[in-house]
Length: 102
Image (cartoon, rainbow, N blue to C red; front, side):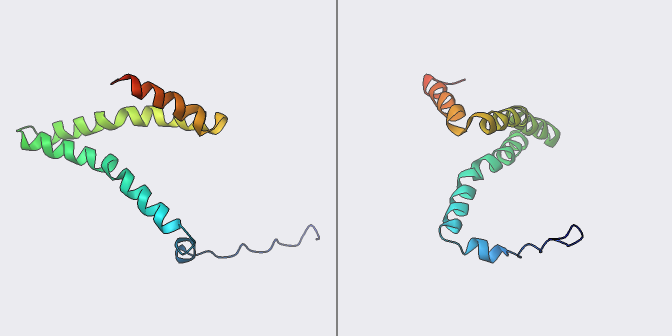
């Protein structure tokens, strides 16, 4: 290969080809179903706050406060998982959760 030759283009992979692979649709469906409560909790907090007589600004503040700990801790958790693996993070976290509420 000469220094001026261009590399071969990467093959074009479509979403249909990926989702058609074995077990991928089941994995994506389970992942989306499992994460649905995390996405609906801020909406539920907002609805609860406005239904109980609070303003939508107060509901938005509560929803933001709900998401703040995740926004602050998940990058650190991801970095620890990248460095030490999933089990080095999940096993101590699971053991701590068994001890009781935070």
